[in-house]
Amino acid sequence: MVQRLELAALKARLALAAGTSQAGVLPLGALPALPRAGLHEIEGDAAASGFAGALAGALAGGRGRALWCMPLTALRETGALYGSGLAACGLDPARLIVATPRQARDALWTMEEALRGGAFAAVIGEAEALPPIAARRLQLAAEAHATAALLLLSPRAHGTGIGMTRWRATSAPGGAWHIELTRCRSGASGTWLVEWNNATHRFDLVAVSGERPGAPVARRLDRPARGADRRTGEAPVRRRA
Picture 1 (cartoon, rainbow, N blue to C red):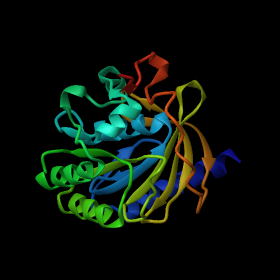
Picture 2 (picture 1 turned 180 degrees about the vertical axis):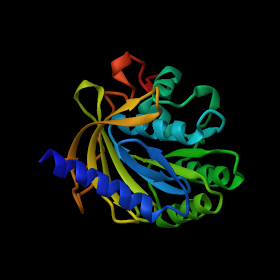
Picture 3 (picture 1 turned 90 degrees about the vertical axis):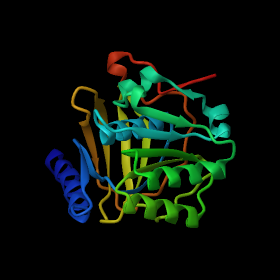
Picture 4 (picture 1 turned 135 degrees about the horizontal axis):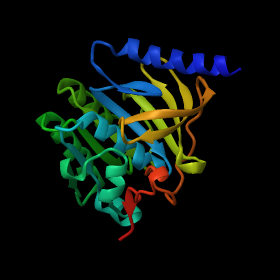
């Protein structure tokens, strides 16, 4: 049984990597490699913010910069980002620029302009709604300028199926993250129980729950727990104002 589950995880990783080899991918350890150029939708509970931060940190490495675009409505609802929590997830706060546009629609515009500027290794945005035309513009800008766009979806937003991948990240006991790849262009899918390794900047596998082709996207939960590496007792990614 264990061998079958490990084979399922390996097959998903190989399928995603094979489908994006020309665009360039970011190795993530236990998880499938992430296409560096394209739109990636992320939903879930508190772990979604940590997952997005970890991806941005891995994409930026030690030299690149990341932009986190957070509308004022999201700032009031979820609280400000917390530097120690971001660092625990692999994203150096010194290499992060935070933008807080007044309107939600301005956040999508800010993301698109940042992608087109080419100054960032990753652009994170939080969206209350995602019109298909806006998603398409983000995808085209990310592809054209070889930058990853990571879009955190609110409980009220729905995915468009336009992006390269769609992920769901939720908190698990012991500080682990339950990560589900629900859709990607190569057809790969799967679920993994992982922990973020801040030393290697990769995800370590705790257990594999196997492939779930066509798994439904669950509702986004609230954010009581944050996406930090709890093995080291680090601070949360979000801090309430």
